[in-house]
Length: 326
Figure 1 (tube, rainbow, N blue to C red):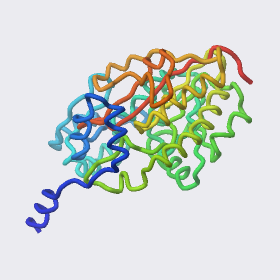
Figure 2 (cartoon, rainbow, N blue to C red; figure 1 turned 90 degrees about the horizontal axis):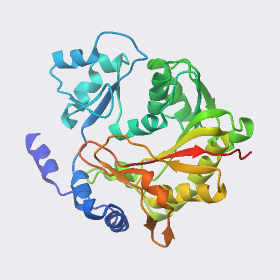
Figure 3 (spheres, rainbow, N blue to C red; figure 1 turned 90 degrees about the vertical axis):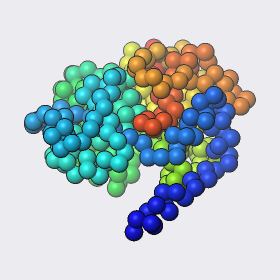
Figure 4 (cartoon, rainbow, N blue to C red; figure 1 turned 30 degrees about the vertical axis):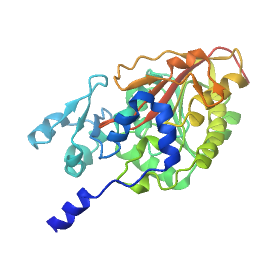
């Protein structure tokens, strides 16, 4: 058994698609080698305190179990643990009873950027499996109105179960295509999060072919079409003066800057990109151009997280609605 494990660990990494590698070099620039190195091994495990479930101090419980934690300086009540302790963490009582929630730190950024407050009306347009929904509801202190929308039935039921297990019973859930939601509730929300389905490039690992088995440039273009429809709906749901965060777990500019640029062109004078300071050292500004498309200068306020030993790849852009559009 030991020899088989050693041979498996010594095996060379599976080759990523050559087209993806070429794109990564152009997107990441001087950071490309560091990103490739990060894709060689599993990432550390992110975990955050879930205040929606009361109980004894979960950090003390992890310490008593000998599970090491490294706090995240930019995220209150969140930490990372070594990748090889994931299974042990998953079985720990503080996780199984809901006091701690396992979530990659990059995934915690969009709710942080949205900056919800208790008493607001908030929409999470692509909510399953519920990680960000729960984070939003906790930041709202369970006060106000939070709508969580999911279009895929199996994922919707997973969302419902996740909310019930982790203190999110007050969240209003809807099995509905997010692209059509705006027709029912135009300009109804103070803040909207659209963490869009994407090509998931930020989650690729070279030794886990399943993470990139379905990737292609064709899929990138297909996802961008879906994302435009979702972002349009999200923006139409937003009140004038409201704030929207668009995010993905991919590096592809077609799914990130280009989608936001499409929205700005669709609603000239009614939307602007706003600065967001998350205090994350891995953050990079949005791209100024990609292939033949040049992006507005304000895209420097967007945030691209390049994958490393802790963070998955992510993109987010904070938008403000400056005028009515419906």
